[in-house]
Image 1 (cartoon, rainbow, N blue to C red):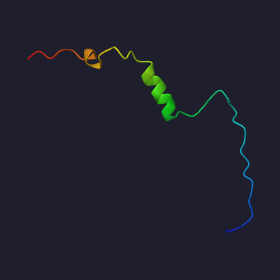
Image 2: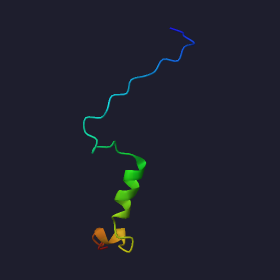
Image 3: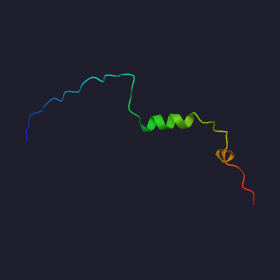
Image 4: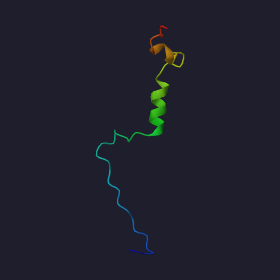
Length: 49
């Protein structure tokens, strides 16, 4: 199906405008919620040799 005419595409309005698809920006925001001063290694129990 080939056509040189521009056919407008109908884009329906979202039923839930409050919802937005997850994106890389959302993931970065989740990372910002973590305390940057907190050492992630502290979450693990110290290894006893």
